[in-house]
Length: 301
Image (cartoon, rainbow, N blue to C red; front, side, top):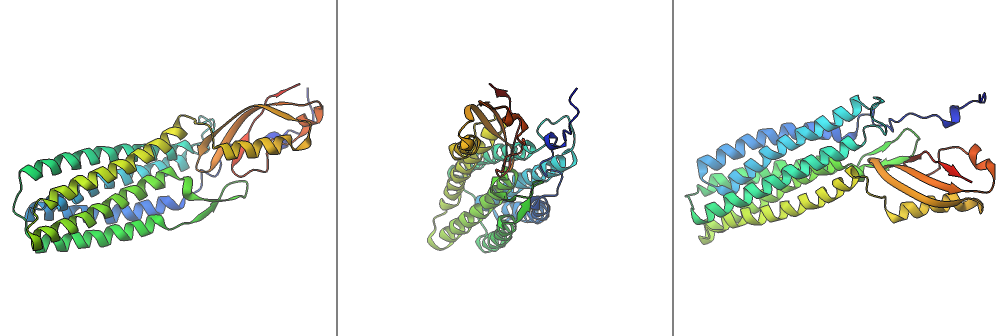
């Protein structure tokens, strides 16, 4: 039996997922703000007859639900970070939350487009002044939410390397939701002003359709990113080359097979095969000096 210490080869799989992420607090703040504004816009859209305003309110309703999923994903990942049933930690809960948010975004885009087309052929009277006032208030609230979620914070993972949250798909989903809210508020204001001062009543539902198309495009982009993480898509070529260069720096080891995939925001795991002519490679530490990368490796001779 091997009697030497194995401490250098041991590590947990939390990868700092047990820490409260900056996006969690931001999501909770925006949920409250969004829910309040949602009630105001839906009720105002019904009372004043504005489809663009009603669409904006319904949009915020869907986003309030999506933001709740975002908050739940953060909390679940944090509370279960040390659960050994998750082989690589709970980092992918982040991507799952982002994927769910993207799906909801796509569903809302379809509903928004359908309702706007119906209103295009069945216009109703609009109380312009009140509808415009509420739309402006919605834009202010949505702008504040975009600012809250878009503020860059830094955090450190368990190995002490600094990261940004640009790979936080959960936060990105929440950010796109409030961005979509801000967009529909702008479109609602443009449509209402055009209808009031130029008699272009058809602009109200047309802006709803334009907003639906843009939101659908955002949803598609987020779906593509998060699905790649959930399906263990190979890491970017730049990261693969960085690891290959590091492994083969001793002019003896040769990397013959490499798989790198994301297991959390800016955190990667790798499975690789190394051909080497000396046994010292077995004594090397399993932790490479590469940002966010943890791996276990089989070695062939």
